[in-house]
Amino acid sequence: MMRLRKVLPPTLLAMLLLAACGPPPPAPVANRTVGAGPPPSVYSVRRGDTLYSIAWAYGLDYRQVAAWNGIGAPYTIYPGQKLDLREPAVRRPAPPPRRAEAPAPAAKPPPVRPAPATPPPAKRPTPPAPRPSPPPASRTTAKTDPGAPDETRDVGGVTWRWPVRGRLFRTFSASDPTRKGIDIVGSEGQPVYAASGGKVVYSGDGLVGYGNLIIIKHGNRYLSAYGHNRELLVREGDLVAPGQLIAKMGRVDNDRAMLHFEIRRHGKPIDPLRLLPKG
Image (cartoon, rainbow, N blue to C red; front, side, top):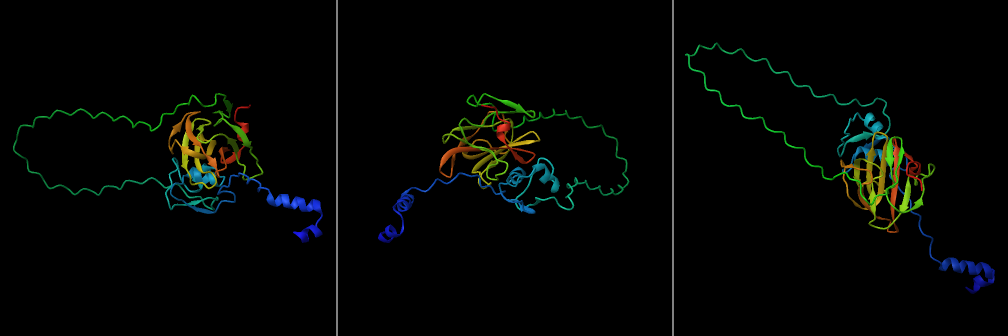
């Protein structure tokens, strides 16, 4: 210390001591997704994947991935299946429907000797046709929650509302791959609502950087995503109403309670503020 005092000016020495004693700056909260780089040419499907989640992770249109691999709706995939994530030189054709095998020619029956005449058997009464069983009841009832934000906005034939009540913490940036959506600060366990009606196409924690994630399909153009939830209240295949309660807000890196929200059109991220109600 005595040497430093002789070499350094007193003002610079005081600044160095304050910097050494002060707390480190807080780490920024960023969305570190698996699709930060270009997609691999071939992807091996893992348990829990859906075609939608794979396309989402690499910024691709799910319909394009399906076409490259000859997969038709409802886009069912299986663990271990290899998927092309880049346009192949020759697209895989959709598997043709199985043809029923032609029955073997029946052998000629032996000649039948005429039987002695007997009275015809009495006809049995025809039993009544069985009644069709009713369809299984849905696991969830699509219903707008009374606590959902009231204000809505119609864009492109889709009605949007805010997915959660809170303070806008981080906005979208087309030039920053870590800011593909917006972050909204709230409280842990706070209700998260569907920004519009649609079908749940992913519900799980398999996408790195999103935590517990829900992806909802709205028609053929839009997908919305809700990340970093503490609890997921819907599962794949559920139909949800606009403003339906779908999750409860969680924490990001044990730092702050926050919802990460994205909207993609044809697989590409767009600024959610262009679709959500103003104000």
